Length: 128
Image (cartoon, rainbow, N blue to C red):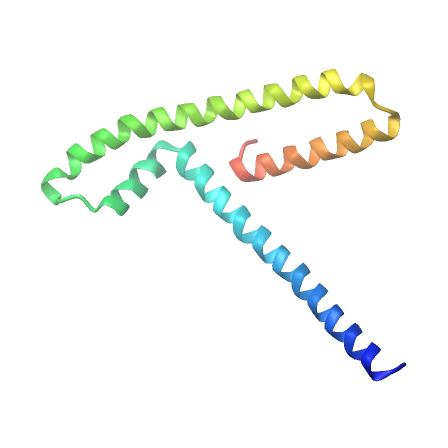
């Protein structure tokens, strides 16, 4: 094997390995950030605690700020739950309408993908 080809293969392999590792690390970081955001928006207490830590209100205004944040935190958590439920209903309707149009192989792929999405959703939102 000539030296130029060896060098090209080593460089190409290194580039490919770097891309794979970078993609995996990026996926982990984005996944953790999405989970933190989901927990923050979907839980009133976490929303209030996080906002108070961010705002750092003066001690004499802390209770007033907390009451305002609880009001909006409750609304945010409720809307987040409703949004998730609505997304699940839309995806289920799409699956119901789509399945009769697919071949057995396509149905199997769609079914596996839905299972992956469900596992990810449960892990992300820590539902039962």
